[in-house]
Length: 305
Ligand code: GLU
Image 1 (cartoon, rainbow, N blue to C red):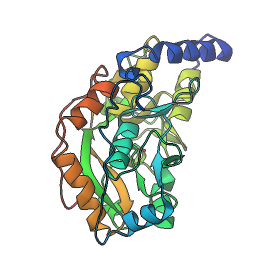
Image 2: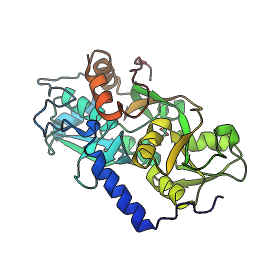
Image 3: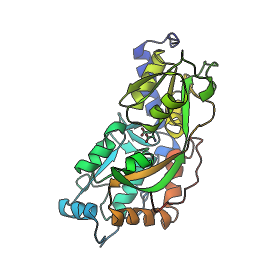
Image 4: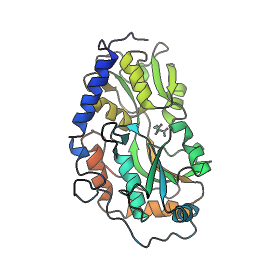
């Protein structure tokens, strides 16, 4: 394991992060008030009216509750993020969740109509099975194993597994450079933790969230963090002096919207939204990830996701 290379004390790091967070709220990605706060039209489009979906248990539940509960991440900048300063939720996944809500006829700007629950990677299937959330949008890879318990709409985004390392690290250059001496952090119940265990000799440390792993990397307690490159780019952008991506992506992760198993009517509704959504996907991408360096091409929906 590499020794601590970040000489700054924790408080200085924390202050730096706060400053970066404050800076970030001035980036193009944060403009336009995702909930229409600045007066611009919301990026997710208009709130639909008179929506009906036949034979959808999810839609029936939402209708009788009079609100939607969405599962999200809240520590992944650019994707699913709760701004600790403003209290605003933002990111590509959050705006995609809002787009779905608006298409279902629920106004995302109205807190009594759309509620968010942060659910860690390991707890997503169970949250959907329990009905704690109506759908989940948060870097959720479509896999056959997960499809045994839940269903997916999408894919709506493609990325691949990568490695985040210290900016001054020139020993880790990609997956094949990991050795039995390398300590890699990832998240319980995620696809990347499984792949890093199967495909490399590295020692693996696990936490509930990627932000915990990033803290360990900054402290020098681990040598790398592994997860989807789209997630890692968000952390690197927050702290480019200390963090960088090493090497090329080594998997294909297809993000889907997690839904209750077998609710094909709801699945078709969301898939149609993605397919016939005009420029909305692109607008959501540009706003949140346009400057991040990830590919901005919308994937084709797979009806059997
Ligand atoms: N996309 C991967 C997964 O679903 C990693 C990101 C995450 O844990 O949300 O497991």
